Image (cartoon, rainbow, N blue to C red; front, side):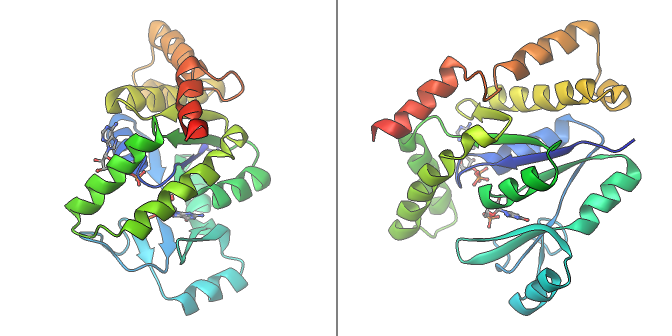
Length: 236
Ligand code: ADP
Ligand code: 5GP
């Protein structure tokens, strides 16, 4: 059976990487798609673990050879999802998680409408700014222009939120992680993949409570919490 393709996007600094690593420890039978990028490795990043780090020449060769499901330029660097990652997950019947930007997500939604798309947003622009500052201070590289650019970019990305199937507000990390897990679980149940759902400890009560939590994250019926977060971006 073919696995489910999950797409997760978020403005930089929303806490998407933090949430994805939590999800990968909570949920079995899901692979993280390792993207190709032309940006240099940061901190402790390793080639083949966080990304396949590559040159612009090699990246463009892959584009010309049609080796990408999607690709985009993000903050001056190229990023792309290789079709081989999708093929491998399909062969093994495993779910695949793509952590990609809005431009890439829109390409995948068009090509593969069954993909389950999830947008993570911060509770407000003030919180986003604080997280961006804290993270850049921790990495000893605070550049005002970079923070300003990421905040402006966040507003532009939020305009595409309605194209996603789900949206979750990352205010309290555990709550957002529970919602993300509930979405994965509910989509597995909906797709009839009981084996994957059972590996997460499915039971009737868990199934119905996960479905209720996932329903609160549907973008076609925005919750009060989602509307409140969106309003903070519209006010300023
Ligand atoms: P992204 O991958 O979206 O760019 P990160 O996962 O790197 O974001 O998170 C940005 C910063 O915010 C990090 O310093 C992280 O520890 C912090 N963070 C993430 N989620 C939360 C949260 N719910 N509450 C407080 N801080 C958070
Ligand atoms: P970072 O450089 O901080 O790891 O990632 C920057 C942005 O690039 C993030 O929004 C991340 O989701 C996005 N990104 C990572 N891999 C891919 C990819 O394969 N395709 C696209 N379109 N975006 C990606």
